[in-house]
Length: 268
Image 1: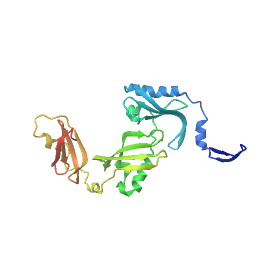
Image 2 (image 1 turned 90 degrees about the vertical axis):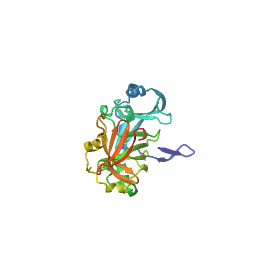
Image 3 (image 1 turned 120 degrees about the horizontal axis):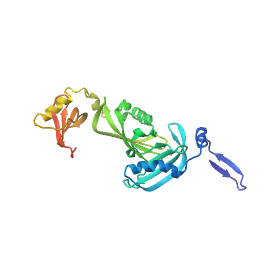
Image 4 (image 1 turned 180 degrees about the vertical axis):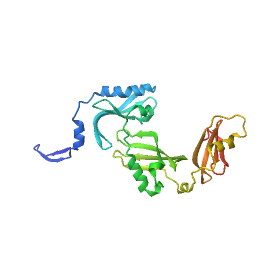
């Protein structure tokens, strides 16, 4: 709210409003203490062999996640493995101490009922409506990764995606999306090359056949390690079996059986 007074101290203008759902979230139930909320977070960090070295911010607030309001403790914490400019975001529900949001690298997400704050539908809608991105079916072509960076004290978030076509990963293709605190896309880096849609994603040779093309010259070889992917080779895209063996990576054309490239895994 903003209140404006005249010289006599009389209020002459009031601007602002109460959001009923938000006000409701702030009323019921007594909030746990900051220390109690941290008792939820600290063991997770310590279980990963890390230590909190700085507390950039902590506050009790009503926050909106997926159209619903919660009273919660919000923490921006720096551990001994992170630059101080990149705190990790933690949100603990204030009425019951339940962990709601955490940086995914710290935890086994299957053990917690976490809330994903990223409005993924907005990212899909952006990709569809901005034809220059090249995505027609972003729900299937953008594969959300574990990487997630929350921007300190703004509520914004950066998401990283792998790219796939008809279920086949596109080698080295990445999309990075930045959203503001309202969940609107403010930056979208990456695209789908239209040439990729011309590829026949049904391989003509099997993974076993691709493996034999590489291993046939060797008496002993490692456990099978083959992946189907789309790669770009000399400005053209190929459906490829990527075969890994003894520190080397072979890229085998999944239709012709030709070895397109061979290099060390370190170079890869």
